[in-house]
Image 1 (cartoon, rainbow, N blue to C red):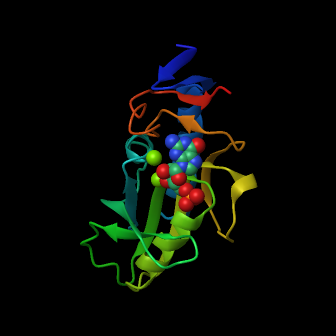
Image 2: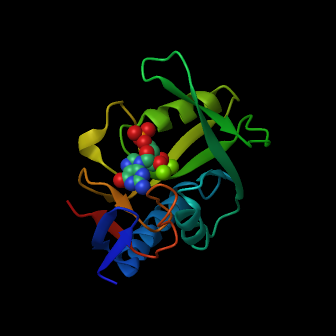
Amino acid sequence: MDTIQIKDKKFSISIKEQDILREVTRVANEINRDLAEKNPLFVSVLNGSFMFTSDLMKRITIPCEISFVKLASYQGLSSTGVIKEVIGINEDLTDRTVVIVEDIVDTGLTMQRLLETLGTRNPKEIHIASLLVKPEKLKVDLNIEYVAMNIPNDFIVGYGLDYDGFGRNYPDIYTVME
Ligand code: 5GP
Ligand code: MG
Ligand code: MG
């Protein structure tokens, strides 16, 4: 499919599954090389990263564990107004090598919040693997070591990412048409 309709918006094909998988394979190989001796704990951030996590983990060949978290938004008193609480992490992170697996880093505020929260649990180190990064939108200083693809500042859906809850199921990535 070259275009899809989700609710009030049309989207056009942007990144095909085979191109996504090529970059996911490259990222997996980098992690296999870098973290081979570290028994990493992968922490996948639901819902958006479910497809990326699945395809990535099938290509990870080193000893590792996988866990899943969700971010619950609630109105807080921070400058941004919305604070995200990390729910579902039960593992002991003490002295662990943690790899956060995210779908997309936009402003980076969500990732910053995750790093702060997981950082309080005394991990040895935290690495970031993100399927997508929008470099033009990044507001905070993050070291995102493992990136499948940098993309322009357009709204995308598919391969796990949603528009108002829909569109996560598509194997390809689509960009909103204006
Ligand atoms: P950040 O805190 O980095 O600004 O935002 C990260 C979150 O915003 C992502 O986890 C995702 O839920 C959402 N997001 C940012 N850009 C996009 C996009 O282009 N498409 C979709 N579907 N979600 C996005
Ligand atoms: Mg996400
Ligand atoms: Mg979303």
